[in-house]
Length: 285
Image (cartoon, rainbow, N blue to C red; front, side):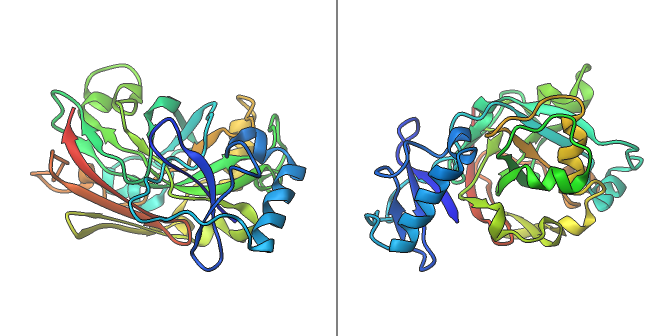
């Protein structure tokens, strides 16, 4: 299923994109798309039954804002340097274990919302990523297979980053990762049963119409199931938590000087195979 949330920011309602590409209203079936829903097999069953019946109310997609596909996110765990080609382009060693940092849930915006270039920023960068949404409480998992079994679904994430703040200003990476609007998410949450192998997905990103990233999750150093297993050894993952699983090669930071960092007026478009497409115009904060 393709689950999403539509409407003005802060007042989104749950929806579903059916097999014909028609936008359907789910607000009569569930209250929202959140961790509570993803952990409730009976509620998900009602959604599937309503979708199969084909009588959910139609929403006119024209002019309708698409919000983040998930409400009430508890935490966003991010995996750094998780693609062989991205590590190579930045001159970094292949990590022996996954690199973990965090994004605050309030960085999440809709897939087509404006992204703000922070004040004093000179190195705002792009990163297309596969986002993993947790559907079952995960703690001390033993295997990658068990990790995959705890995944409710997948989405497109844009891990926008300010490289000077991240790398050159001391401390952890978090200063360059948590600026407002720095995690567009969606358009859809695609349930795991519709993504048979998360290690075969293409990822692409364009800036002002020029292809900058063209990779595949097959390049991940630590695949999805292993990432979930590993993270669960250090913290408990709850339904509705999100893991951003890293980006392939092609970021501005990996380019020769002058590096083409983002500026106000730029347009970024990105997609993950089968999970939809995003488009953001950048403006100054």
